[in-house]
Length: 283
Image 1: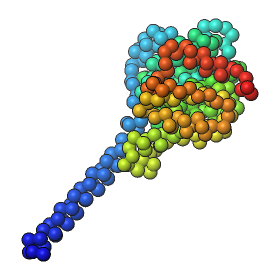
Image 2: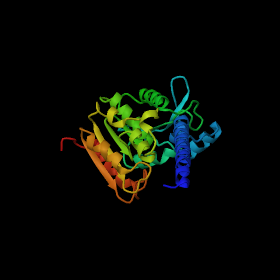
Image 3: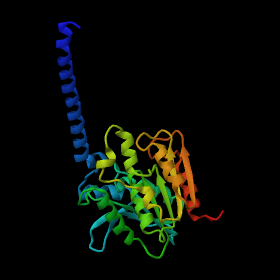
């Protein structure tokens, strides 16, 4: 071994050590940033003035839904046909809003006489507050208490809203007649870990939305849709939720569908979903 080689070894080890320290520092910085700003990666609230909300709601044929104190908790549309056969509570995905979910009221009420209620999340549109798992669950719990008590209650959850719907289904397991979950997940933790495989997401994720856990007490009808081209919530997570559910259930698989994408015409899907809700579960 010559003298130059002996001198190069310490230099190489020193460069390697510095490179490893740099990589470790960058990794720690990335973990810290994701942990600090995680809710910005989960929630995408659209904020409007009250006048804008009122204008958009009127255009969609929706009206404000308030609690006993007169505070805004969402939007609603009574069934145009009487008597109503039940109430449907819509829990939308993180990038939508209550007024942006009016199409669910259109589709559902075209097939059945349901009163439709759409929860607004804290921090969205003109509702005060900030979104988190806790605030969404509290808002959903309050909204559920405001639904008519004399008729069946059904839940429709979309994407992140499937976690909220699962919470309600487990909390009020004997008061909910049926649930439809559109592009759901078994837990948000699993989905987040799949998107960031090199980060220790399971250690620092605050809002976990463990849908499979919340659904355990529920034994009513559960409908699930999964989409073959869904890159936001890959269908394997929806299938995990569906396969783990022990009650009466129905699966819709859309091989060419993207996230929360019900094939056209949506009337066919909603006709089947409502028939599932209202049919004989013993068959």
